[in-house]
Length: 270
Image (cartoon, rainbow, N blue to C red):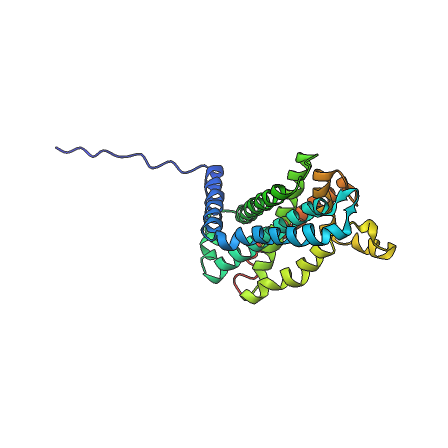
């Protein structure tokens, strides 16, 4: 006489744990992608930082002298670190999410039980991770050659994270509507680059004519760069708390837009 042993059905995963696993999986995949192609993701920014150091620090910096009471090379260092964070955060998400669309495996995420906000958060966290990695590398390059003070580390971290999240979300939105690889380069070339160069990376807006100074205040990157610079040097062309309010508002608006558009599968099922 045989007896049949009935096994209890497996316990379903708790909703919170299932979402955490999904988020962690996206983040781990992004980490492996960044590390696997490090000559494309990390090395170029280190090389660019060294070139800026040589050209602006050793050549042009000597002719300019000081700005806002600091050696020119020291003054521009926070802005160039932030530039690397912005570009890499944006590029990581736009290339990764568009690659998922192009490879047709984004549908696997869309049909999974993960809510849209978890998917967006996973990709944005990947962008922040690459921005942080590159920012640390570029900071190391600059601090190896020059003495860069660190007055307010909390403000430095907060400004870097908010900026990285903002441009990661921007990259996500660009990738949603891009229909070719050429279209994912339009925003960095014609929007990001001008905003960065006119965002106070290489100069203080106090050196500009009054009309140009007022025009510069429209550039959101000006607030990001100056809040980051304040964390290092204690000087800023704009109010630091105003800058944080603008960054926080940008994060909230872009995140809501990204989640809403992903819910509607805008630009994905076309």
